[in-house]
Image (cartoon, rainbow, N blue to C red):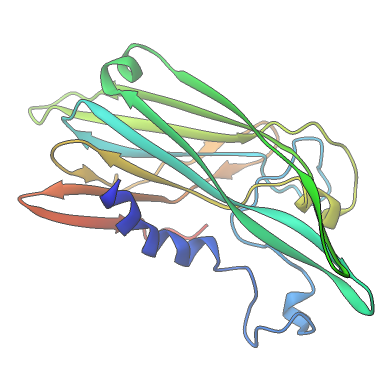
Length: 228
């Protein structure tokens, strides 16, 4: 857990990279089109051709257990008397602990429902919609003398929704999604060429992974250098 918490410092930089852009005012022109980084929209929303799923791969060296944490922002619509409406966001995390031997035997599928809700605080009301999220995880042994494994993670927005308004789609999307992974014993390494996969009608996708582990008594966090 400590390594995952340390990796959070890097992961948060990506998580909030597109929250507000300089000059960090809601009224700024560049902030009139929100959430342009790492968005997974519902598959029924096809107006902008944004993806509904993404996949990443990394290399593992040994280990017995893998702690995965998928992170994203959940958009909340804020309304207030006398003020223009604005979209905020809450952090959401999905934690999975899996035996690496199980991942080698076959794909593990984790379905999660992220609750929506409505909160009122004086004149301010915040509304969020529920999200259906699916995480697929698997591993395979690679040939060669080093005993490396390839970990494959696929994150999908399975929320059922159809419409043609992007602001409404974003309120049902996974925003700025990424993975943090902790492999017990030895280090977790990043593949020099992260996976680029096709999702039906969505083109080729890439997803960042923030990888934390112990190596020779030192704890490190690694961030892939490929953009969203």
